[in-house]
Image (tube, rainbow, N blue to C red; front, side):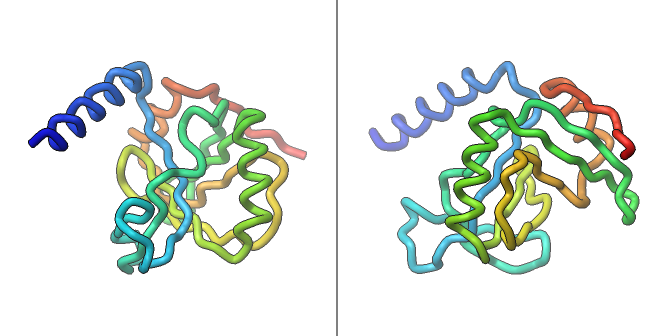
Length: 152
């Protein structure tokens, strides 16, 4: 019972801290199924597979500074996220150390997409190729700066 009370207090504190946020963005890396439940958690991915991801996210909404939405081929939205300096450093470091791993992106608690780390990413940008709704874009706009499409 004491453990349950502690967990409830931690969740209430986290909810208070996040009260100013509208969009919840998490990037988790695939974990080993043999890791204990302290380090990994099972997730039903969008592709229909049951996988394990590390409990601690690589990146959160705190590292995103701006975004640029696009219309995806399937009718949903995609977006290019621009990370701050801290997020850029994390993405650069982890993309080198975790090459060949899968990243699982979650928006507002739901699985959005899976990304394969196949190269070093040092520009501080993450492309979400599909799965965002118009409501997701509205919520993102409340937290992050909206960037316009730039043609080269």
